[in-house]
Image 1 (cartoon, one colour):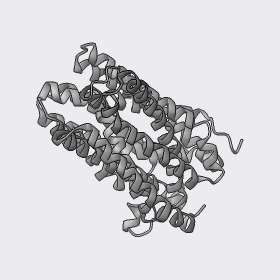
Image 2 (cartoon, rainbow, N blue to C red):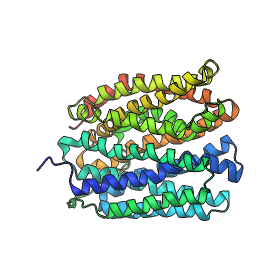
Image 3 (cartoon, rainbow, N blue to C red):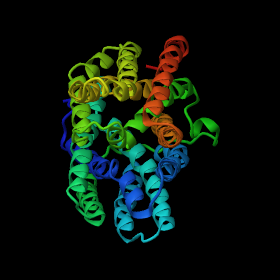
Length: 398
């Protein structure tokens, strides 16, 4: 029973995570169209506005990690989950761009806390011997949401559904997720004497090298999740782009068959290396679709979805490995800080990807934006191999 992973609380937090991210991903590819159609924003402005969410999440993460480590985790998780859910109602009543940005910032602040809380709680309720596998399934709940959410959102937008109704669907999803989250039973957290407040209580300093490598990978990922539908439209790929996310999530699901177990066997850096190589090839191919379409539209359409599948396999291979890497660099009392640093690194790259992708597309094209992103993945691979791997082997605590 000691190593039992699938407890009722584990199922509840999986459901809560799925419903939260479904509401999140449901809007992700629709919001650029919302800003363009309702507020007449251009690509550069869209990138900056959408990045407000990520910047807000980034600003709160170090503090949320400290709070999660210091106080009872479940109340903070539920409060932030409730605020996150409430902001979808805010989008419905936002009549001006300024109001939308305000709600977007609050949404980012709450996401920065709820995501750290959820990731930390799921680590608490699973046996350490199955952490890689458990985090893999936890991430898979997000990935399944990523497959259904954007596809459903784009289908509804393309069918002429009002943005208010789309926002309402996200609101309902997260409201149900909040109910699931309230059913999670967390272990008693023994009060500990807190160390004096220092930088390492907010940021896992030993995790910074890995954080930089992850940041470089998340920049093109941010470009993809926000702009791939616009990119397909720009280069005249006539397919239902919602399926791009479905294939991407399918690839992540495939990766779960082996990545988590390999991480639990200690092959953390090897798993990340393999994932990075796959991702490098995918982003260069994605940038090349603008040229392939001039040769054969049919081949490009097949390649487009093939890229999505292997992007999912690449990132799905790395996600649980990176998460475990950060946790293994931290003491047990720093789990929240480790999770916060991991997610902060990811969010910084996502935000930069939104801004950079929109700006490069505005002055040139999305193809050059993805080419820029692909180049960054090469730098990430080199940095991870030369700096992060020896640093991790030297400083890991488990």
